Amino acid sequence: MNATQVLVRAQLQHCWQEAGSDLELERRISRQTGCKIDRRRLTKARLGQDAVDWSFEELGALDAYLSSMGGGFLRRPRLLALLAQQPRLTFVVPAYARKAEQRTDVSIWDFRTATRVIGAIEQMQGSAHFDIETVVDGCQSPQSRWDAISAASQAVCVIGSPRAFGIAELLLERVFGSRGGSPFAFLWPRVRFREMPRGRCSAAAKQTDEPGVWGGLEVGGKTYWERRDTDDRRTYGVIALHVGSGDDGMPAVAALIAGLTGPGSLAAAEILATQADFVSTGADSGVYWAAVEARVKEDASIGDNRVLVPHSARLIAGPEHLPVQVTDSGVPDHTRPDVPARQRLGTR
Image (cartoon, rainbow, N blue to C red):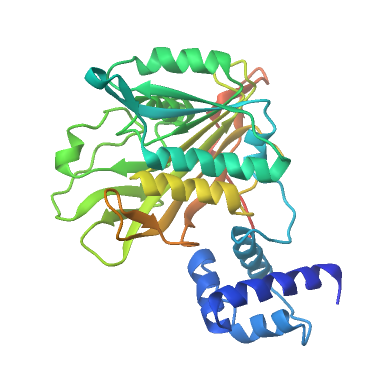
């Protein structure tokens, strides 16, 4: 038994103890990665009884699941490292002013999303240096605030959907607007549609009056709705990460973590922090994006009682890499992803 087999055996044993059975472990891996690995093969690998002849798909799924549990065995560079290697990371979050009380409030979910990314960076390199900038939508010009933050920061992480945050709309427009729109679209019911920015990337073109729908995400030709009138509630989010030269009016690294709701943003951060197959291709420049789904439950707490179901976050589209487009003069244009040259990331 080689070192990798020993490592996989130990990690599977830990996951088996948490799952309670090999059948439940099989279900969890399948639910999170979309790949079914027969429980009898998992038993053999966990107990080290016989050598298991894994397929490439099984290896990718197994590594992705073990990585989400804090392990993994395929050592590949994560996109998180592109943020972590910058001297300082600036988080940009929407804020809500209460002038009479001299208060500026930030969503607890945006705070949790930022701390999840910070914790992952600290785990990766031992420390994290960061700032948090708040922008009060409606009171401050998103364009002027974005220009000021971009000029002062080499790495920026924007948290929040275009409905909640004008800077998210600006970032999406800058990253995807030159090619006619983003590969995903946020959709809202009619009552919330009136509040929606009308930029190209927000894609506020679809409405619904269906009861129980909080919003939707359109990606890959499918629409995923977040509903409140179901016991199997699911939320959705996206990750978009632009890597450029740093001299094109954008930070060297600019990330967007956006959910239909706060839990969707946290689910996207979970994928960015833990998924081993959300990796760079080696040619870092360009745009990386992915769409995420996670299950939500409610507990007995007072107020916002939504809770992400542990280990339920999974990719539903991407990751994809859109390399930079090269101009006729041979100079890379970091603001224009080269759409035909899409590359599929990961092993699945």
